[in-house]
Length: 182
Image 1 (cartoon, rainbow, N blue to C red):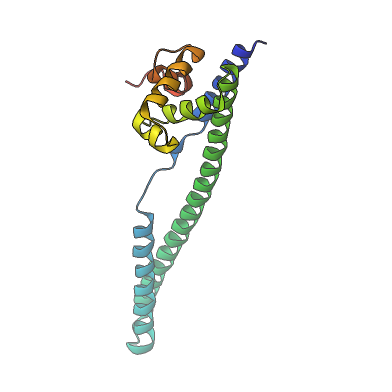
Image 2: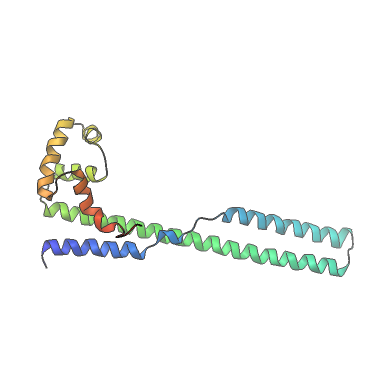
C-alpha cells in the first residue's frame, strides 16, 4: 500500500470513528432543576406526613394517600439520580473518546507533514495555519516578522500541493465534514 493510500485510509478510519461517536446523543437537560424539585417535594411530604401522624392524628386513608405520593416522588427522584449518574458516565466516556480522536488526528497531521517533508519550523507554522491563526498572530507567537511567516507559508503550500491556507486546512478536515448538510 502506498503512503498516500495509507494516509487516505487513516483519514477514512478517523471519519468512521467520529461518525460512530455522536455527542448529539448527550442531550442537555434541566436535570438539576428536576432533582431539586423532586427533593423538595420529598422533604415536603416527609414533613407533612410527620405533622399528620404525630401532631394532627389524621385518618389512615389520608396518610396512606400521602405516603403513596411520597413513595412515587422518591421513586422519581431515584430514577432522576440514576439518569444523572448515567449521563455523567456517558460524558466521561465521550471526553475520553474525544481525547483519543484528537490524538489520532494529531498523528495523521504529523504523518502527513513527514510525507510532505516539512522542516520543524514549517510544521509549526503549518499547524498554526491549520488552527486558523493569522500571519500576524503566528509572527507574534514565534517572535519573528510577519514577512518571515508569509515566506515560510509560501514554501509550505507547494510541498503540500495546495494553493493557500484554506486548502491546507481543507486537506485535513474535508473528510470530516458531512457530505450533505441540507
